[in-house]
Length: 190
Image 1 (spheres, rainbow, N blue to C red):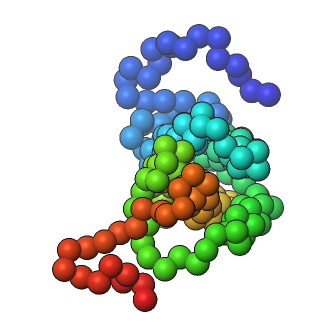
Image 2: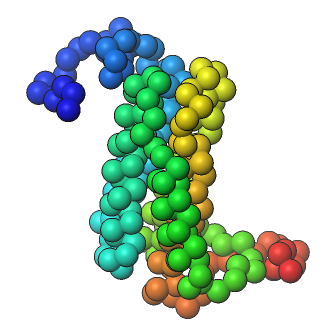
């Protein structure tokens, strides 16, 4: 394993740069650091979901995802390395299909909320979408290694977080919070 942090306040970033795992230094507003920050924020938001009482299946799944978020951060901090695999994406797809199979068909738009745990899932989902956009920007601007599965992983993860939110909201409530507009039909998906 690489260097362990024994000193947190190093002052090396006071000039607006930060270090990557390969020892190089780049600006703190570089697209790579922005993407890494979004991944870190996503991981923290998943931690907020995990403070709630959850079914074991979801708790185990989210814990595994937090480890993959560290893998993704590592991938981004080591140019040319790829730690998110196609198998990682496939695992999310299987979890998504399994959880979605137990839900009723979606006929209306759902508002973020429902329960505290579901609301935290929706927040994590929106952060995940931002992280996905940041990684796409990084790929486009730097030609990030073509072997990366980061974008696909984040795309599936945002879908999975939506389905987990639905699952958790329905666990306590029989009705999910649905979108209704003034003066328009309440079900735009029909």
